[in-house]
Image 1 (cartoon, rainbow, N blue to C red):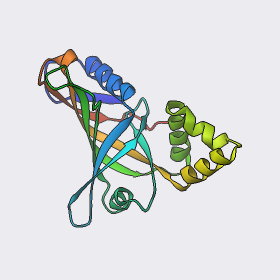
Image 2: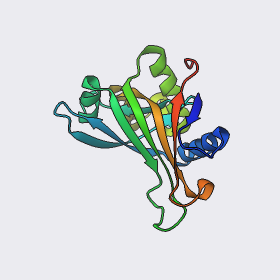
Image 3: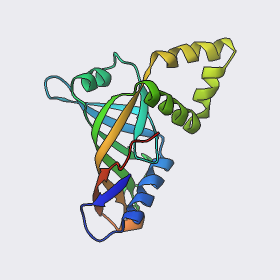
Image 4: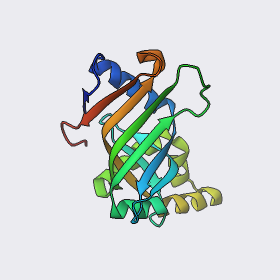
Length: 177
């Protein structure tokens, strides 16, 4: 994954480091999809990510955002820690791109990344207790979605200064395995 800076003055390596720090520090995202009437819909989900800035989340295929994505793949995502205090050094990401259900090898990869990030997910899928089996059945009814941002806005005031948004394009140089 290569990041091409749109706003000037910051090294790509510095922006990448900031992006991955924000991704690592946060478990939840807010995502916005577009319905058939071109109205926004927002949803919150736990997410995982790859080194190639591919983000994955689990969702029920009948949920509003999943149905929206089946018609229109456009999606935006915000990632930030909600406990930040106004006036302090804030940090967050805004990502813009497309999203679709992960299928076949991509879904297997998503499950592996998700299980690494959320060990309880893997425990439930392997579990033998009645509760684990019930939770596993629910989780297996959901599907992974893969979000591919092509543009990102980074707010990392401790790194780049107060009120500075660094914008960049995300270019994937090769398909991930």
